[in-house]
Image (tube, rainbow, N blue to C red; front, side):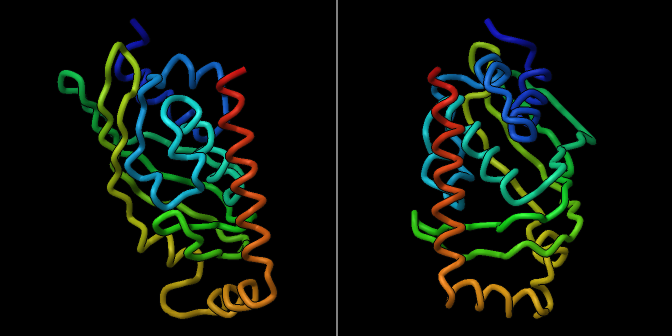
Length: 185
């Protein structure tokens, strides 16, 4: 058996914020799946702690000082609902994918972010085995200068046409793959 459901839930978000491989092994089940990985590098879809570590590397590559302060946590059997804020500063390219292909690269803006999210976690053997989320992405995109149309849109186009977007995507995907590999060592 693993840790308490509440500690496992909090542990998952500590892993995302820090990249702590030992905590990932303790809090994340080997069969872990992340429904939200469809917008992230391929390594984020790897089952188990490796996928969680890759997801954290992807987020930290875009957001410095990443944290997930918890505002509410409710447990019901093998499920935990956790409401929190994703906070940080946008200091690296935020790269989003669609159907495994590069969708958009948002160049660093320096903006502070604070986006409210609700996560539904399923547990097995005291570890998180499945993750689903409801995020306030509209607020996040607004904080990054994308809503309403703003100068960030011009940066996105510039990065795409100059090849910086593709280069940034390859660099972040490689960092996520390296982070996932730390779960195996």
